[in-house]
Length: 113
Length: 111
Image (cartoon, rainbow over the protein chains, first blue to last red):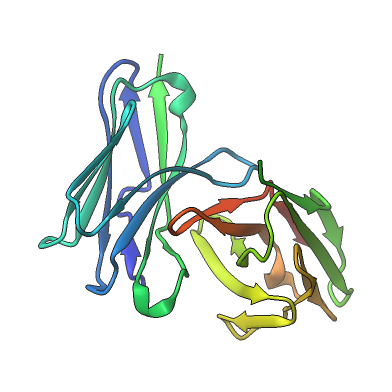
Protein backbone atom coordinates (compact mmCIF):
# COMPACT_ATOMS: atom_id res chain seq x y z
CA UNK A 1 0.00 0.00 0.00
CA UNK A 2 1.65 3.18 -1.24
CA UNK A 3 0.65 5.83 1.27
CA UNK A 4 2.60 8.58 -0.47
CA UNK A 5 2.26 8.80 -4.23
CA UNK A 6 4.03 10.80 -6.87
CA UNK A 7 2.06 9.96 -9.97
CA UNK A 8 4.31 11.78 -12.44
CA UNK A 9 7.56 9.87 -12.87
CA UNK A 10 9.08 12.68 -14.90
CA UNK A 11 8.67 16.38 -15.72
CA UNK A 12 10.44 18.60 -18.25
CA UNK A 13 10.46 22.39 -17.86
CA UNK A 14 12.13 25.27 -19.68
CA UNK A 15 14.75 27.21 -17.75
CA UNK A 16 13.24 30.27 -16.07
CA UNK A 17 9.75 28.79 -15.95
CA UNK A 18 7.93 27.35 -12.97
CA UNK A 19 8.31 23.68 -12.03
CA UNK A 20 5.41 22.13 -10.15
CA UNK A 21 5.90 18.73 -8.57
CA UNK A 22 2.92 16.99 -7.07
CA UNK A 23 2.42 14.50 -4.28
CA UNK A 24 -0.69 12.80 -2.90
CA UNK A 25 -1.10 10.90 0.33
CA UNK A 26 -3.72 8.60 1.76
CA UNK A 27 -2.94 8.52 5.49
CA UNK A 28 -4.92 11.26 7.22
CA UNK A 29 -2.65 10.91 10.26
CA UNK A 30 0.32 12.42 8.42
CA UNK A 31 1.10 15.79 9.97
CA UNK A 32 4.51 16.74 8.60
CA UNK A 33 5.66 16.75 5.01
CA UNK A 34 9.07 17.13 3.42
CA UNK A 35 10.65 17.44 0.00
CA UNK A 36 14.04 16.03 -0.88
CA UNK A 37 16.20 16.44 -3.97
CA UNK A 38 18.44 13.63 -5.15
CA UNK A 39 21.22 13.54 -7.72
CA UNK A 40 22.35 10.18 -9.14
CA UNK A 41 24.63 8.18 -6.87
CA UNK A 42 24.21 10.67 -4.01
CA UNK A 43 22.10 10.77 -0.88
CA UNK A 44 18.91 12.87 -0.90
CA UNK A 45 19.23 16.48 0.22
CA UNK A 46 16.54 18.04 2.39
CA UNK A 47 14.86 20.98 0.64
CA UNK A 48 11.83 22.21 2.52
CA UNK A 49 9.13 21.02 4.88
CA UNK A 50 5.66 21.97 6.04
CA UNK A 51 3.58 21.19 9.07
CA UNK A 52 -0.09 20.31 8.71
CA UNK A 53 -1.03 23.46 10.61
CA UNK A 54 0.15 25.50 7.65
CA UNK A 55 -0.86 25.57 4.01
CA UNK A 56 2.23 27.22 2.58
CA UNK A 57 5.94 27.45 3.33
CA UNK A 58 8.43 29.38 1.27
CA UNK A 59 12.22 29.28 1.12
CA UNK A 60 13.84 31.25 -1.65
CA UNK A 61 12.87 29.76 -5.01
CA UNK A 62 11.08 26.84 -3.34
CA UNK A 63 7.50 26.92 -2.06
CA UNK A 64 5.53 24.00 -0.72
CA UNK A 65 1.73 24.08 -0.69
CA UNK A 66 -0.42 21.75 1.39
CA UNK A 67 -4.10 21.03 0.75
CA UNK A 68 -5.19 18.82 3.61
CA UNK A 69 -8.75 18.32 2.42
CA UNK A 70 -7.43 16.95 -0.87
CA UNK A 71 -4.49 15.17 0.80
CA UNK A 72 -2.25 16.84 -1.73
CA UNK A 73 0.97 18.79 -1.58
CA UNK A 74 3.04 20.40 -4.26
CA UNK A 75 6.51 21.88 -4.63
CA UNK A 76 6.92 24.98 -6.78
CA UNK A 77 10.34 26.00 -8.05
CA UNK A 78 10.51 29.49 -9.52
CA UNK A 79 12.48 30.25 -11.59
CA UNK A 80 13.69 26.80 -12.59
CA UNK A 81 17.40 26.41 -13.26
CA UNK A 82 19.36 23.64 -15.02
CA UNK A 83 20.96 22.75 -11.69
CA UNK A 84 17.51 21.85 -10.38
CA UNK A 85 17.49 18.80 -12.65
CA UNK A 86 17.27 15.86 -10.24
CA UNK A 87 14.82 13.40 -8.74
CA UNK A 88 12.49 14.93 -6.18
CA UNK A 89 10.95 12.86 -3.38
CA UNK A 90 8.13 13.88 -1.12
CA UNK A 91 7.92 12.31 2.32
CA UNK A 92 5.48 12.34 5.21
CA UNK A 93 5.40 11.45 8.88
CA UNK A 94 2.76 11.13 11.56
CA UNK A 95 3.12 11.64 15.28
CA UNK A 96 1.89 8.19 16.21
CA UNK A 97 4.71 6.43 14.37
CA UNK A 98 7.41 8.62 15.82
CA UNK A 99 9.77 10.17 13.36
CA UNK A 100 9.62 7.57 10.60
CA UNK A 101 9.26 8.99 7.12
CA UNK A 102 7.23 7.46 4.31
CA UNK A 103 8.58 8.38 0.88
CA UNK A 104 6.99 8.64 -2.52
CA UNK A 105 8.57 7.03 -5.56
CA UNK A 106 10.03 10.28 -6.88
CA UNK A 107 9.65 12.58 -9.89
CA UNK A 108 12.56 13.19 -12.23
CA UNK A 109 12.76 16.87 -13.14
CA UNK A 110 14.66 17.98 -16.23
CA UNK A 111 15.18 21.71 -16.71
CA UNK A 112 16.02 22.53 -20.32
CA UNK A 113 18.41 25.44 -20.97
CA UNK B 1 28.29 21.01 12.01
CA UNK B 2 27.00 17.50 11.59
CA UNK B 3 28.31 15.14 8.95
CA UNK B 4 27.42 11.59 8.07
CA UNK B 5 29.75 9.10 6.46
CA UNK B 6 29.08 5.82 4.71
CA UNK B 7 31.45 3.24 3.35
CA UNK B 8 32.16 1.67 1.10
CA UNK B 9 30.79 3.86 -1.68
CA UNK B 10 30.36 0.94 -4.05
CA UNK B 11 30.43 -2.81 -3.52
CA UNK B 12 30.08 -5.82 -5.80
CA UNK B 13 29.46 -9.08 -4.00
CA UNK B 14 28.57 -12.62 -5.10
CA UNK B 15 25.31 -14.23 -4.05
CA UNK B 16 25.68 -15.98 -0.70
CA UNK B 17 28.50 -13.78 0.55
CA UNK B 18 28.27 -11.71 3.76
CA UNK B 19 27.73 -7.97 3.90
CA UNK B 20 28.75 -5.19 6.25
CA UNK B 21 27.98 -1.54 5.53
CA UNK B 22 29.00 1.12 7.99
CA UNK B 23 27.57 4.51 8.81
CA UNK B 24 28.98 7.05 11.26
CA UNK B 25 27.73 10.46 12.29
CA UNK B 26 29.83 13.35 13.57
CA UNK B 27 28.85 16.51 15.38
CA UNK B 28 25.84 15.21 17.27
CA UNK B 29 25.17 12.85 20.14
CA UNK B 30 22.50 10.19 20.59
CA UNK B 31 21.01 10.70 17.14
CA UNK B 32 18.14 8.67 15.75
CA UNK B 33 19.65 6.69 12.87
CA UNK B 34 18.03 5.04 9.85
CA UNK B 35 18.88 2.62 7.06
CA UNK B 36 17.01 2.95 3.76
CA UNK B 37 17.25 1.13 0.46
CA UNK B 38 16.46 2.52 -2.94
CA UNK B 39 15.95 -0.24 -5.49
CA UNK B 40 16.23 0.62 -9.18
CA UNK B 41 13.36 2.90 -10.20
CA UNK B 42 11.81 2.78 -6.76
CA UNK B 43 11.38 5.13 -3.83
CA UNK B 44 13.19 4.97 -0.53
CA UNK B 45 12.23 2.05 1.68
CA UNK B 46 12.94 2.25 5.41
CA UNK B 47 14.75 -0.90 6.55
CA UNK B 48 15.82 -0.22 10.14
CA UNK B 49 15.90 2.60 12.63
CA UNK B 50 17.60 3.06 15.97
CA UNK B 51 16.94 5.46 18.82
CA UNK B 52 20.02 4.46 20.82
CA UNK B 53 22.87 2.01 21.36
CA UNK B 54 21.69 -1.56 20.97
CA UNK B 55 18.14 -0.47 20.06
CA UNK B 56 17.07 -1.59 16.60
CA UNK B 57 13.62 -1.62 15.04
CA UNK B 58 13.05 -3.53 11.82
CA UNK B 59 10.53 -2.26 9.33
CA UNK B 60 10.59 -4.97 6.69
CA UNK B 61 11.27 -8.70 7.22
CA UNK B 62 14.23 -9.56 5.08
CA UNK B 63 17.66 -10.98 4.69
CA UNK B 64 19.33 -8.05 6.43
CA UNK B 65 20.08 -7.06 10.00
CA UNK B 66 21.32 -3.90 11.70
CA UNK B 67 23.35 -3.13 14.78
CA UNK B 68 24.32 -0.03 16.70
CA UNK B 69 27.44 -0.84 18.73
CA UNK B 70 28.26 2.81 19.48
CA UNK B 71 26.26 6.01 19.80
CA UNK B 72 27.18 7.34 16.38
CA UNK B 73 27.76 4.10 14.50
CA UNK B 74 25.13 2.14 12.60
CA UNK B 75 25.92 -1.08 10.74
CA UNK B 76 23.89 -2.96 8.14
CA UNK B 77 24.72 -6.64 7.72
CA UNK B 78 23.77 -9.82 6.01
CA UNK B 79 25.05 -13.36 6.46
CA UNK B 80 24.18 -14.42 2.90
CA UNK B 81 23.35 -11.94 0.18
CA UNK B 82 20.56 -12.49 -2.33
CA UNK B 83 20.27 -11.03 -5.82
CA UNK B 84 17.32 -8.98 -4.59
CA UNK B 85 19.56 -7.23 -2.05
CA UNK B 86 21.07 -5.13 -4.84
CA UNK B 87 20.33 -1.45 -4.49
CA UNK B 88 21.45 1.89 -3.17
CA UNK B 89 21.71 1.89 0.62
CA UNK B 90 21.35 5.12 2.51
CA UNK B 91 21.98 5.97 6.13
CA UNK B 92 20.29 8.98 7.70
CA UNK B 93 20.12 10.79 11.00
CA UNK B 94 17.32 12.89 12.41
CA UNK B 95 17.79 16.58 13.03
CA UNK B 96 15.63 19.63 13.52
CA UNK B 97 11.91 18.98 13.98
CA UNK B 98 11.60 15.82 11.93
CA UNK B 99 13.99 16.27 9.06
CA UNK B 100 16.31 13.42 8.19
CA UNK B 101 19.72 14.04 6.69
CA UNK B 102 21.25 11.45 4.46
CA UNK B 103 24.73 10.14 3.86
CA UNK B 104 26.27 9.70 0.41
CA UNK B 105 25.02 6.13 0.05
CA UNK B 106 26.50 2.75 -0.91
CA UNK B 107 25.78 1.18 -4.28
CA UNK B 108 25.55 -2.61 -3.75
CA UNK B 109 25.49 -4.99 -6.68
CA UNK B 110 24.93 -8.66 -5.97
CA UNK B 111 25.97 -10.97 -8.83
